[in-house]
Image (cartoon, rainbow over all chains, first blue to last red; front, top):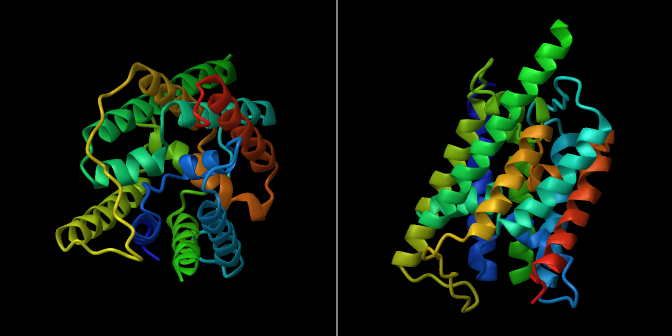
Length: 145
Length: 138
């Protein structure tokens, strides 16, 4: 399939899932917020959030088995498991302190034209691109030397 | 019925992540690599998601559509806080290092790649830590 058609269709499905989750739950359905609320102590209103995550993981497993999408999974540029351990902590910690991630601030925030969501999205896109730039600078320099 | 719709919503989201290519760290990092060999594909993911969500919620709000009497959430902007700016900056660093954000961290679990099996539990630990430290457990 066209290399831009799959991303567009996939994105539309993500938007549709977010819309349906918002209408049925009455909450802004960001993934980090949903996962974070399930981890809350004491637990709050977790039932719908658990159901959403089961649907997400289950459907992703089925879609992968049916070979929807490219099925690609590649780790670029010598990133070790240690890098993934540190990155996991930063993503989880940062998304909760920041009040959202690519879905909550990105899709829902920008989609509903919320200025604060747009600002946070610009910030995390900015530090993410800067991180890739610095990584390539250091990794490029290391491999050249 | 409400839970069935939420299950369907999660399923749409999960299929969307797989179809879109957001679950491939190399492609995400390629998208974030403006200075290098930029891969624009994931801009189409964001565009598709934002347009469908944006139009859909505008239509629901205009017609005051309610599912099971559930009101849509208030999305009017709140003041930008220093705490949330800092958190977003930290999240971006982790995303740029790994090419994985929270949705793909979950959608990739069934495929059991080593990187994801390390990343996702620590992401959840980071979330729990943030909630304790910043008292977000209310």
